Image 1 (cartoon, rainbow, N blue to C red):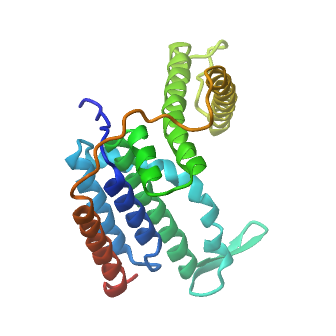
Image 2 (cartoon, one colour):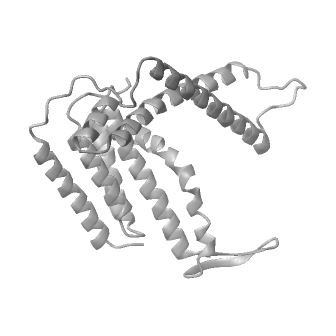
Image 3 (cartoon, one colour):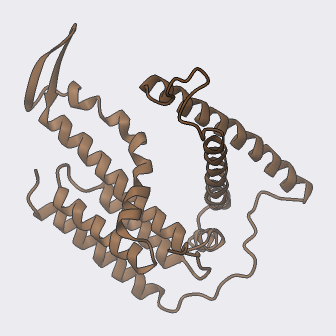
Length: 260
């Protein structure tokens, strides 16, 4: 399937709808998994309408999972609704049902919210998002930072792809120098991944410096140029009201449907 090309238009309705959706998902009660499922279905339908298959969107949303690892310790730190307790070596551990509910809710909320953001940046190009933020009276520094972040993520992804391609081209043989099979141990994989992440960070930092120097040499003033402003959306109010109805329905589902 061909990659979806972002479009440039008055994106205020799309930006407002995405922000309201993310806030609504974040405010869903703990254990409101049915409401979270409905939220994901809404995101999957929106993604499918612009050409992103639901399973691909779900996989791309997995980038949020490492950032919610901090919620996992609460499973063992809570002391209510204990579902298991025992000793693992010198440690006395207990698993809390309430902790599981909190951690799982955080993971699902982050996963759904990231997918909503992916749909937005896939459907609307960066200059249109920056223009929408400006028209919504967001401070110039924040609007420009958001636009640069969206653009730089694309560069970072391309850099990561080049590094992985280079690693693959240098690892054609499944056997090492001493005829040992490489990549079999978790430690080896961890070291390789750590080296790749470190190298990617250094390359990203160096590229950021080059981008800053190039921008300054061209007389950049700290404001991201967006070119010609798109025509205002004549159906902006209708779209915002429709988005408000959608997020209200999701919030009611979270408040009324059974929780686990």
